[in-house]
Image 1 (cartoon, rainbow, N blue to C red):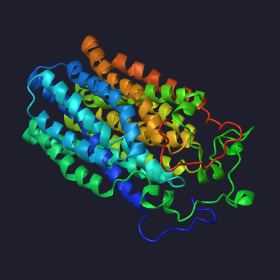
Image 2 (cartoon, rainbow, N blue to C red; image 1 turned 180 degrees about the vertical axis):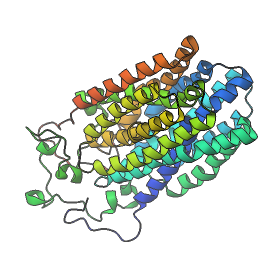
Image 3 (spheres, helix red, strand yellow; image 1 turned 135 degrees about the vertical axis):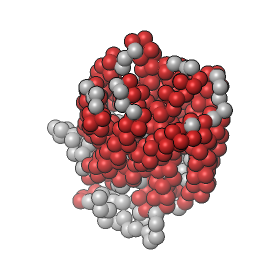
Image 4 (cartoon, rainbow, N blue to C red; image 1 turned 45 degrees about the vertical axis):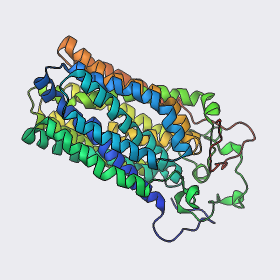
Length: 459
């Protein structure tokens, strides 16, 4: 979207785009390894070590407990100190945990390494940390910037899944963990130290690379604060379009203020229902297809289709978010994901699996982008890490226990049918809840554009 008058550009590459690059690689490796590729390890590890799928999937529940404890702390660190040392230290732990996975022989060892150490690394170099940081560097171009950053998830799935399948097939699952751990060390640590920073104001810059604060057009173009009426849709307006003036200035909500709005709790409920469904189905896709007579390579190809389609979906959603309310794009994501799970329910051939992968990619695959845009669109930049981090325990609980429950249901019924039915219902319910979550209005008399450079001690 073009800048308004009074928003000249700096010459050279705006550092925010280097932030996007660092976030891209953080999501590329952590999600490509911990979510997409992990399903490929499920069958060979269970066969060699004699563990059930439910027992292996329980590591996700342990990871969720770790993330529940970490979320509030990590969010505050992102707000106050930034992601630089957080990501570098997390990468050191994450890479080491993957190397240690190559030596596990018992479930307690596996739970300690993957459920514990990998959880710490995962939670500090992706997700909350990366999308929150990118959101702090952009306002007008936030949709595009976050869309580019989260394509790292898709490219990670598209590239690391077949690479992991090749490594497991050719060298065994233990060697595969070693290679993946070294990749994390070699890429994330130097990138985090070199490019990641808290927010543009710390470097004497402004969001989007503007030299001066962007001024809204029309009679508010003299730099005065916009009236509170621009917070949220206008009275009588259906809210599906993003008013241009909202893109030029935004109000920052503290955690206490946000907690008093119905929108926050409807968002939390919707995103956690959908997070449970999405994390569960992605982890169990490969074993589900193998149970239906398809090979591991077909499962890997399905996830590759998923990742490539989600790449297209993220870019499309990122562009659309400049013109359409993110709430409606989120509803499409959630309901479309439910439809994709319905396709998987009836997929018994490689062709059906690939159709599922494509549909799931353009819907389910945009979930990270939707999350990254919803929070700053509703609650601003300054306390974004604190708000998201404080609510992260709920998300960690749903996304962590979902895969475990999927494994338990399989072990109990020797089928994924019941699991898929539950996940479809959860996705549809999430779509309905997000439609109810209208953007909150600022209290009467509170103006927009009040972003502080440093969060207050007690938001």
